[in-house]
Amino acid sequence: NVTDMQAMFLRCSRLANIDVTNFKTENVARMNQVFMECSNLTTLDLSSFTVNKVIQISRMFYGCTDLNIIYVGREWTTNSTPDDEYMFAGCTSLVGGRGTAYDANHVRMAYARIDQGPESAAPGYFTPKNGYGVDVTFDELVLTVGGSISLPEALEYVGGRAKVAKTIAAV
Image 1 (cartoon, rainbow, N blue to C red):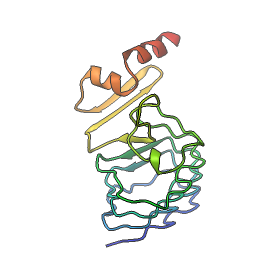
Image 2: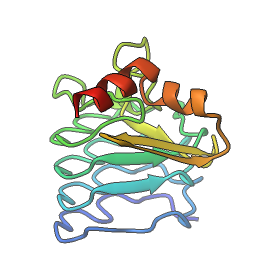
Image 3: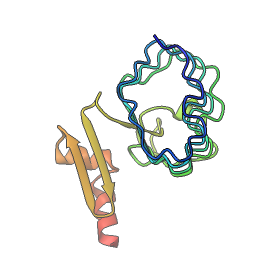
């Protein structure tokens, strides 16, 4: 029945990995500064988090300079989060599941959503997991697919067939 996770891992700068997939967060109201300045974290799996009661989420990932991927479940939604300042500030390595890269002008809750792509109407910094049953990444020459998804869907998920072909041709 935890209701407050504020500053739980604040300034754990040597923390490189953490498994929070068994955390029960359905009653949590305060998640501000949870991972603030955990500068060595590269990946977070928050797919089990329920955040619909969260009202304070400011600086949750602030200063996580090496954080590249944040996985969330389909249910990552908040009803009201008035305190969302600097949620992603300084997350310079962060990239959403469809390629939306960190932008210092977008560090508030508006980008705390599953990425639909940088050119879409709904860019975000999160990558879907569990709720979608799919995990797709593309790194230069390797397309990695986890879950039940067709190849055309996987290609679309990482930016489309043309983008993948262009990237491979350039190598």
